[in-house]
Length: 249
Image (cartoon, rainbow, N blue to C red; front, side, top):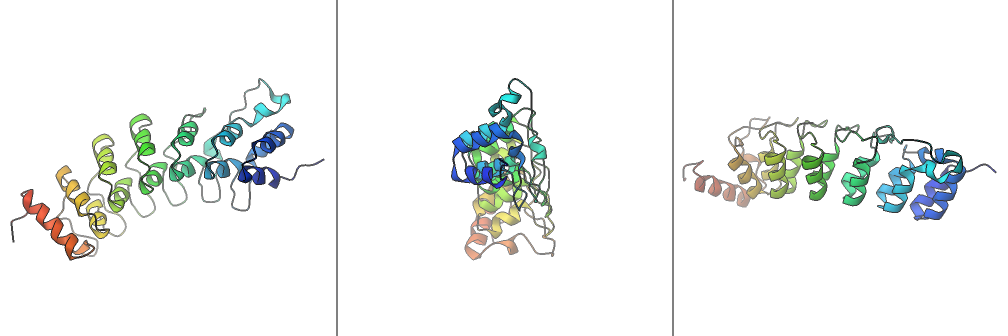
């Protein structure tokens, strides 16, 4: 009896590991079945953060007696959906460190700097979702490149500043050696993004690291003009005065 490829997608989404194993024992190539968005069972297992099913799908041929003992390596870099997301991108965004580490250390090792169709890497997604443990693993253990820009010309540090995470900015700068004054397609630096989202404390942190707070935006506006409101602007100015960066006015 032929197998409906959608059966394994359904089993994964239902979290039914027994059916997943049974289907793979009949046809291990089902691991690479794609839905209408180009997503495979592994994409969905990672999305649903089902560690046990992820493990099974990473080694689908182990479930089939015809392949026992044979080496059948799954290339994560080739498991891409229609937006060029691989399972590692989803794991970085979802924030399950156990699953992310399992994927990131899978042999053959995936390219952790691989970009999606919008130019974003695992680091962009992990920073955006404030998944610090994954960011730390990417930078410290995997030496992820903090200088890769997305289609908006943004680096991970732009996102760290926007979400207001001093901890994230610290590891990107101190360990990743991220550029501080890189401008995106809007002519905005990390400081500008921090202030625009009301994170004056992060903007001041960037100044302490040596970022140029006098740098104008792409439209010619001053850094102060990017502040979310007057309270944010005043806090930032006061911090600059205290740091000796600005004369008291």
